[in-house]
Amino acid sequence: MKEYQKRDWLYEEYVVKKRTTTEMADSQGVSSSTIERWLHRYKITRPRRCFKHPPLDIHEIKRLYDQGYSLRDIGAKFGVSSYPIRAIMKKHGISRRPSQVQNHTTIQPKTLEILKGILLGDGSLYFEKDARSAIFSLGNQYYEYVEYTAEKLAAGGIGHRKIHKIYDSRFDATIYSVQSRAYPELIPLRQEFYPDGYKRIPKSLVLTPDVLREWFICDGTVDRARNDPSKIVAIRICTDAFPSSDVDWAVDRLGDLGIEATRQPARNRIGIRRKSVSRFFKFIGSCPVKCYGYKWPRFLHHD
Image (cartoon, rainbow, N blue to C red; front, side):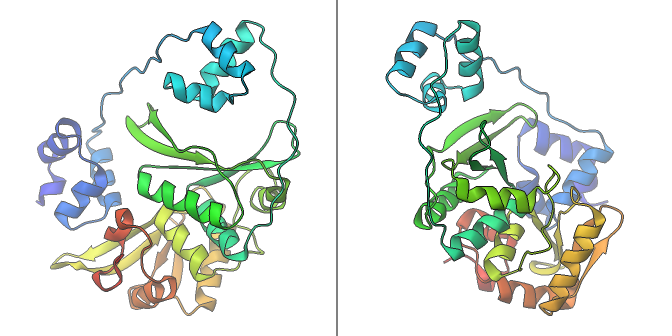
């Protein structure tokens, strides 16, 4: 029996040492999904911590708000998100400011491709409360990747707010989050990716290297050869949340690129065949950030 298949080893690494599934997988030369499967089999979970925000001074909150601070910026000063700030203001009858004049921008084509790739994965788009603009949001475990995304967006015409560090009690983990400014120019993208209110793979999507690379960074995983962990023998893209018809469509588009893939019915995921692994990585190019370099073959690691 392999080490990662033993309950005691899994408990020691995951619960006691608090290692991530990615770190555990790398040490064993397997994918993180394999580690997750064995954790699930033994029902090994981490105890969740109860997170309580510090006391909130309503007088200080009102003073900052009157000075023009946003709810998110006020929350950052108290070490919380904007939601507790909004709730306590409502409780004390503090009226919100009227909506400001809309921002406008011209989104550069390359930035739009990066944005679409991230939206297929960890990114999301939601309407501002008056539905006149939309906001892009990304949450990720790596600060480097969130910072890289923010810089790419800013360079391509999409301003963003401060990057925040957030404790996610659902997974007992710290994540980093960034949101764009609100732009009416993002509404068509929201309608394209959420035609019925749920995220879909748009049929108008073109799988360019930038789109596919960002999607793989967010939702891709690799299987490595048992006798040579440096060798990648299979690629999977986690598409569990999409309808099977969307996944079948994406498989066909990969085929158009000469990348042979299939939809794996058991978990509704895209599996890229072994003989297309090299072609896939040559198509998407090198990894743009060091934190995700472990997903790439050595010859295409981030410089």
